Amino acid sequence: MNKPTKPRRSRQVKLAAAGTGLLLAGALAFGPAAVGAAAPPAYPAAEAHKPTPIPDRLILIPTTTPATSQRVSWRAEATADTAQAEILEAPRALGDVKPAAGAVTTVRALASTPVNTTLGYASTYHTAEFTGLKPGTRYTYRVGDGTNWSPWTDFTTAADGFEPFSFIYYGDAQNYIDSAVPRVFRQAFGDRPQAKAIVNAGDLIDSANSEEQWGQWFRAGGFIDGQVNNISIPGNHEYSGGLSTFWRPQFPYPDNGPGNAELKQTVYTLDYQGVRFIGLDTNHQSNAALMAAQTTWLEGLLKDNPNKWTVVTFHHPVYSTTGTRNNPNVRDQWAPLLEKYGVDLVLQGHDHSYGRGNQVAARRSATVHNGVAYVVSVSGGKMYALNGGENWTGNGAEVRSTAQNAQLYQLIDVAKNTITFEARYADGQHHDGFLIRKNAKGERTVNDLRTAENTVGEQVSVDKTTVRRLETVKVSAYGYDPGEKVAVWWREQDDDRRGGGRNGTLIGYEKADELGRVQESVRVPASARKNGVYVVYLDSEHQKITSPAVTVTK
Image 1 (tube, one colour):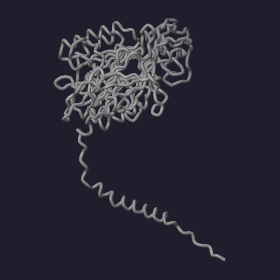
Image 2: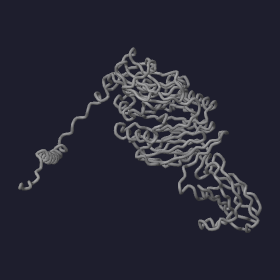
Image 3: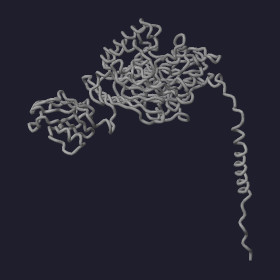
Image 4: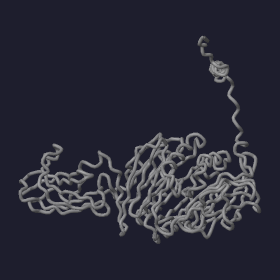
């Protein structure tokens, strides 16, 4: 009878185990040596950013007719005779699935501009414009020289008229563009992949004519720039003895500004799905003629504006958030127009911190105003300390939210009757937000996003604090949802201080209007005690707020 044999490990298993040991031993043996070894040399910027025949730095540039046309610019070693683009309505598939005959349209570049760089070579930028497109239609395009092409990339034309959409806004990138900025751009796009535009409020880079920094900026955005329209204006760091030589070749914006040669394609406007975007150039504050030209042009655009919403962007803030900075020429010339014509958002940079506020005269309650929302933000890694809001309070304004030592991005969602604005940190966490409501008359409220803290307390306004029995008190409050049902109570102040208990006397129910306002006339009950102290208490699903104390004299 055969004896059972002892199982044997295969030679392969033994070798595998031995190999694992060798790998582990190798890791232990070589790890410390690698750490202590001399660092490898930095890869030369001249090699890292050198152009090739393969297109790079693709970026979508909006036109004045975004429903039927689209510009794109790119960089490549190609001649003016060969630079071209191809476009077709976005197919379900490419590759083995070839476009049908006649589906692809070829468009020759309308401009090819070489720019001498700091790295010892020229970078040539090309611009193509697609025309005759269908509104609200997804297209696929690529750029190249007929042989060397970019990947196929998709974009969607604007709707012909109003349609809800989202866009992203950044303050200064400028510093740490290759390390700290990319995660902000990617996080923002991850949060709003459907965004139709990106607004940059200047100082995209630090040195106006640095090929290396422009290369880093385009790499930070990556594929995003090729499929989302870019709306940028120059900051002071886009100037060095004049406007950056890269600006106009990279950003061939509409040439529809005031007409001054110095302002070409740094001051421009476009209408997109119910929003009028206006870009201004604050780098000419000491030039009275150029400031006056922009002021006159700006007023014309605001006075004759068929769009419900208006967004203005420039670099140097109306109200500075850091240091002793001050821009009186910007504030004195433009702020009165922004307020007079009801601009909704003013998006700014320069101060490397976050600040959001409004003029004090526009304040309507603790959480609501009806004026312009001024915002300053930063997306890059260079930070400045806040100045306590002195430039705001010293000029009739108030800062409502601030942040320092933080990189941020802003998500802006446009709807028919609302704009929702949210600022988030680089890690995606919420920092600040507000909701703009506007009715058909152009009346507006700007509401802080609700929190547990800002939906209670003394937020009801009354027109008098000393009354007689049966006298009428005019009451107003804000911050509701349109149509929200609100119970109006008259109750003793001591009940209010105790935080509940008896609600008092029910006066009646009101519904908030389309702007979230409640405006009511309250008759003082006959049962009110002489010398009694009362409050008007408004109770609803979203708010439980009271008025200041009201004393009954007789």
